[in-house]
Image (cartoon, rainbow, N blue to C red; front, side, top):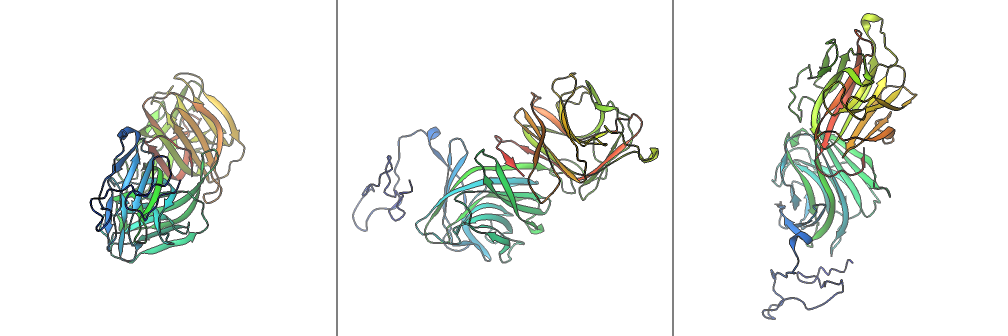
Length: 458
């Protein structure tokens, strides 16, 4: 009920029923007054309460300290931070980061209530990516400040002066979702609003190339009060998701070669799969179709488990140059999630087609006939495709504008019981045996979450 008295030693004049109660502290002698470092214990099992978790006091000046308590279900973190600031040449704050992350990732958290006896305009709570635990480390952070502004700040290289990236966003609500995406040396920050249905609408804040942070970093939560008083911040649903991004610095075991691994499923070995170090793809395939009770196609596939999201930007889908550019109307190329590598396996897919627009198709049991919800009549390029698996529920989305509105859900939501490990990736079939088609695209990504899913929208 926000009745904690930050001026009272340790206990804040609180009581179990929320009423303010004075003179609860232990007194060994009245001189010099109530004793510091006295513990008050409540007879409550740890599984019902809060667990203390480790933090790092990055003491760049003379104030940094703090602590963090985590709820038994791991969803809520109550974190205090006392420090001069995260700014200038040395930072002074409390930092919660458990492990070094050595790959591309997406980090998300909800920043909720912030409490302090001495509100400061430039107090900061939020997400941080940091090379190391030195006070002058390179870092990229997105904060919610005491002014309720959203600011992206950082230090390009170790020892440099801090800077603000882009403009701070003013007049924010009492709670914000924050997100940082790392893709190679590119860091992108977002802030989000949660709707009544629990879905989060993200707004891109800024994107920066920061080579100075390096390939491995600490990723976590940062709190600085910018005063002598503690700042307490409530964080919810903090999550770091591994990001599989085939590239020159991949986060999966894929060599940076011009030829990417693929599987031909009941298909002729025609054409090739080419991937550039810049992240562009050209997937050429023959095949008789992905339809009926069995399939014939080429599959650029990766094995994952749990909840997963795959995305790709499709720039072109072209016919066979050896046959005057022949492109059958139901040639298909796009994203697939597949239970096994058998030609009659269950799958859920979103395709561009020769002339039939977008198509969402699936097979709900091994050896069953395929299903098809509807097509989207438009066929412009480029188009961004996305397929999600949350639990046993599969959905597909598309968009035509990278910087514009969010994803549009498309086709059918299907519930299918795949195995614990599935194959996901790019599927291409010419639907014309002996002829080939080529899908050209960029930004192919596979993002796997090992934590309980939450509604997020890019």
